Image 1 (tube, one colour):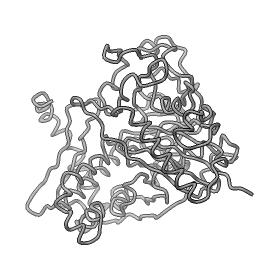
Image 2 (cartoon, rainbow, N blue to C red; image 1 turned 180 degrees about the vertical axis):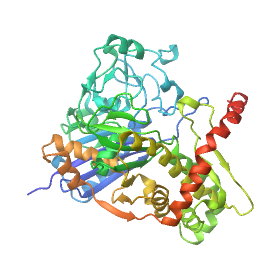
Image 3 (cartoon, rainbow, N blue to C red; image 1 turned 90 degrees about the vertical axis):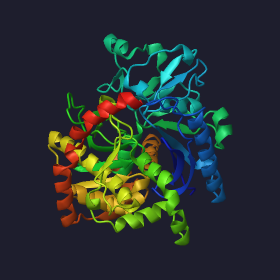
Length: 482
């Protein structure tokens, strides 16, 4: 009997990835293509150059299909593809579905406000999300998932459809004719068109299935369905989330978003903007000095930095990092900072301090969410490329004081896409059974009690007070330089 396959399509801030799984959850092959650097035309603006999301995805499709065919795979046995694209962006399209303006990235301050038509945008017919845009590229349909509308959109998260309240449409400065039709996660968006099929090397007619926003799909693909188990997603934006069954109203310390399971919700607290981007920034700006050492030891820069930082004690001998390289919308004046330098500190201290700063920030946000929900965290799952670092995994375990694990496949969004695709294709009976089959657990990390005690003291006595002391200075600095 011929094998059947599911495809996960995952486009993030930094790369486009396509993964083919069999229906038992085994990874058959993948293709990946880095996105180009964002255009930054002015401070706090960010756009994807040209048609980079689609262009990079076409390359990723080409790579995965080359690998698939090299293994003797039969593309006619691909049952469906689930599509997940970076959230909180704004895409402006012409009447024919082509870009009227480069995709506006989630780090752009224009996304903090409702859509405003500008003369420079030209003739804009549709205002949509990245998932709506890529769906149109793949299928020719003007459809999107209902679960990728976060921010200034007139979406009703109770009915999982567009709002019927005219005031909500007016507040978002949109009309029904400007947005796509929506379907629920796990439902059909359309079929792969002949045009797209020729471009990406697949047979036309493959069902294209809705998922949700990228963090929700990651949470599904990480297997975080059990109460008290949280996912920390290490991406350009680092988020933390748990699953729930209720669209909680007036939450103070988290947002209830639609999950990638129809009728369920994802509770997500504040995260770290430009989180793993900051780590890449440090590598690119300061890694050159370590290049000779890395080459001599036959290591990558990342491996060398992790090995060096592992030798640094917890707390980095007093060096602390505040991660505001991309400030939150409510405090646009904030900037990143490192504080506590003395003669002991090396590049390894700086690198480890940046990792610890991420863990401190996430714990402080997540503790507030756990208290409000009344469900303490009893374990963490870490996803994303940063989960490859044993050092980073141990830092999370020590800062939070709970067991921490990673899965065999660190990029769990692709797994979540395949779960949604499999549900639509009738491969699985339930989302719980689907995650049992598709999610493969990896290594576990147990907290070190001594390090946990030190981290608690550093956090309570110093880190939690940093913004209070730095904000007045940064408020004075911002108008001078921005």
